[in-house]
Image 1 (cartoon, rainbow, N blue to C red):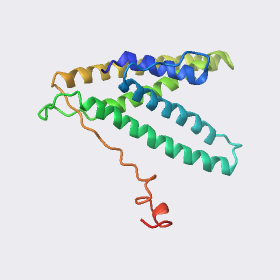
Image 2 (cartoon, one colour):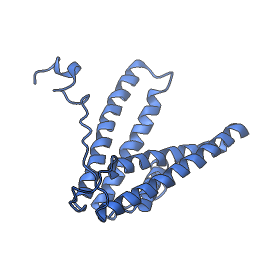
Image 3 (cartoon, one colour):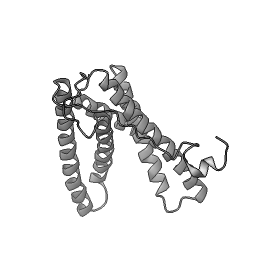
Image 4 (cartoon, rainbow, N blue to C red):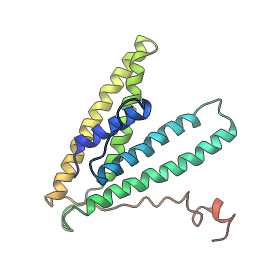
Length: 193
């Protein structure tokens, strides 16, 4: 079910399609891959909304709307990372004596998603501006690709260790408070619970 190289390929294809709709859209082969693509889409949308928030000429009303969008997208991103872990935990053997891994596969997949976006946008910089700018981004791209290769290997190793009972992971709920009208004081002081 978990193929780290396939996850990266799906994320890259989704990133390309998001920037160039004429390129083929990734086709998930399972419900798990659909969650991967949904989670990556949340990161894709989040990335581009955050760009709008950083525009020094953005109006106050634009920044307010973008901030609300960012909160909603970040909640979706986290919810989908949890869904990935739930799906994987259903396949994992129950081995409560195995050492606990501190980061779940869903969170690693989320990090891979962010790296796919960083790599794509860094590659865009290889053909613009000055030779110094291009070299700086070639150097960045080398680092990003190495980080992704390391993370792909870590994810594959973790999943193999989980399946063979050498490691385990738990579902760690993000328990965000900022979107919950019963937990965010700005929201709960305005409306009854």
